[in-house]
Structures are given as structure tokens and as C-alpha cells.
Length: 499
Image (cartoon, rainbow, N blue to C red):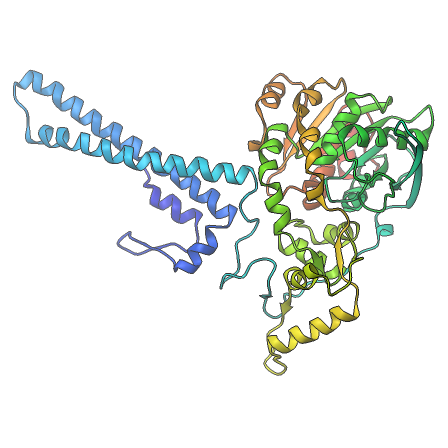
């Protein structure tokens, strides 16, 4: 039986054991830093389980010794000193075990719930209490390129599609922006998450088009990206689902090609509502990425706190990209460089507005190279930054998600049953198995949909790991004979060509 101490040391660097076996705890600063790291917390939770298992085994062995000793006493007619000692130790150990187990279990379930709801920071704070929105010193050679990338590097065309809005009173038109690639094969209709844009699918588009024969159409949903809509405040699931159906009708008329809808987060919910309402008659299949009714409904309570924690403005697009990467919102720097341009816009408010000046410093995350020759003071650099900001326009979020709160419950309520009721092949991609709710767990056991877990990803799974998502989707489509692998692709040789 291996003591839990050994497992704890193997999982958590920074904790060292002396030759005597005693743990040397790190400094309080290091401990405070690590306690905010989800990876460290998961290791700690594993060690809590190891500790409980270890105590349970000790208790069972001690109890077995006492029972065996008591049994022998029946034959010997007397109690040995070892039996008496074990009998005295057993209740003491039991009370200590219960006193230890209950707090451990409470701690375990509390931290697990926080991890499930993404309430913990996506990365630990820097030494000295610096958060992701403050200045950080990275050292020489660590500076990265945060300049934006053009959409044309990943998509072939970008156009505005005019769709009709009939609200019962008057008829208006909405200009919905779409990005597309490919000329033949089934259409992958991509719906982004809340606050994102069609550009969040840019890197994924380049990867999937190299894997299989397909066409890609990525939509800027209403009030997102470059889409222009008269009533931008109506973000109900029904309205956005109708928008998707009207885009398909405007692009392909009455005879649309085979379409597979793929949606992430809010876009996944809209894809399910669109499929359930049969707005896309030629629907081949449905792929939903990291959105589950139970987890989503639980997370809504903390969503406003998350939105308030984000910077209000950025001094440049580069600054916004840098923040998204360093805060962990998007873990793939290439995707962040093309995606963030669709999430922010130039501020329309004057520079001297009350909330603007305060949030400038919050959104700036600087990398400073340590140079002995030209070491400038932080005060001087801050002055230069402020002068630059005054010359340039500030950038802010394209959509204020906090104002859409009244629609959140409508996006996700009843989502699991709607998803399971869709009569097409379904694929669910998750960043963690813990995100499954009861209905989906039962449905997955009954084989009603295919599920794949992509670990080591954030919520933006298709941005953090576009290759893994493309591989999963390509395999799903080829298995259902929706398309074929492209010749020359390694999987084509492995799965298609006869050996």
C-alpha cells in the first residue's frame, strides 16, 4: 500500500520531501499561486482521493486485526495485550478518520463544482499577485507576435447575404455576413458561440478542408461580427434559428445541398433549435461542441461575474489578442490572431468617458524584455502608452453580452431533449466528461449519439485544438458516408485504400 504522500509529490512540483519523509511546504506566495491553477487543483483532488483510500484501507486492516484477535480470544479465553491495544485504537482511528474524511469530501465536491462551472482562473496568477490583466515580465526571448491575421488566409470569400425579417408589423432586411470555402461536397454550416464571430472557425476551416471533400459556410449571427440587423436586441433562440434557415434559403434556394450543422456553445444551442424546427430541410447531421444543458444552466448564475471581469476596452487589436491568449480565453495564438478581430470594434465613445480611462490599463498586458542597457522605468513606459492611446482609437466588444441575459435560459432550457430528438446522426464534442448531464448520459449509453472528449482544451475547443476537432468530425462524416477523405491525406491511405 503506497502512502498518499508519495502520490501527492509525484503530481505537485514545488512540494519536496526530505530524507526523513517529511514534506517541505513551499512559500505561502507559491501556494496561493498554485491554488488558483485548475491543473494543480485536479492533482490535489486526486491526492484527496488517495488519502481517503489509504485511510480506508488502514481502517479495514486494523478492524480485521481486531476481529481476528477477538476470535482468537474465544478459544484462548483471555485477551492479549495486542488485542486490548488494537481495540482501544480502533474507535480513536474511526473518529479521526471520519473527522478527516468529511472535510476532504466537502473540499473535493466544492472544488469539482467550481471546475465544472469554470469558476476557477484558467491560469494561476503571476508572482506578486499580478493578474492576467496586469503587466507581466516574461524575460528575454519570450515576446510573441500578436498582430492580427487576415480572414482571407483561411476563407476563400466573404459576402453579405440579405434576408427578410417579418416581425408582423413591417418587413425589414438583415445583412448577414458569411465566410465560405470549398466548391464541392457537403456543406458544413458553422455557428459560433456568444460574443464570438464566424472568424472563430478560421483555423478549423483551413484544417477540415485539407482533410475531407466539403464546403464551409461560417455565419456571423445577428448582433455579432459584421452582421447588420435592425432589431439587434432580439437574440432569442427562435429568431436566430430562423435567421440560419433564411441564410440557407438565400444561398441555395429551394434545393439546398446536404448540410451538416456545427455549433459551439450558444451556436450549438442555436443549431439544435434550427434542426428541431426543421429550418434546414437537407440536414445531414448535427455536431454540438462543448454545450450541455445541465452545465450551461448551472453556469448562468456566474456568467455576469465573468463578463464583469473582462476588460471594457483595449488600446489596439493587438492588445485584445494578447489579452485573449494570456487570460486563457483562447489558448491557440494563431486562432486568437484571426478570431479577435471579429470580437472587438473601435469605440464610439469619446476618450474622456468615465469608464474608458479606467479600463485602458485593465486591458493592457505588456511583455517587457529585461535589457541591462536600455532599462526604462515603468512610469515612463506608462506615460508613453497613455500618449499612444490618446492618438489612437480604443477598441471595445462588438456585443454587450450582459444585456442579453434575458435570452440565456431560452438558449439552453430543454436543450438535451431537443438534441436527442433530432432524427439525424449526432456528434457531441466535449472538453471534459464531467460536462454530461443525466439525459445525455442515458442517451449516450443507448447509442443515440456519438461522443468524443478532447482533453486539455478550454471552452473554445475548436479554436484551442482545431486539428483534433477536424479529425473527429472528418472521421464522423466518413463513417456515415457523408463524404470521403481527400487523396494524399494519410487517413485516406489508412482507411480507404485497400492493403
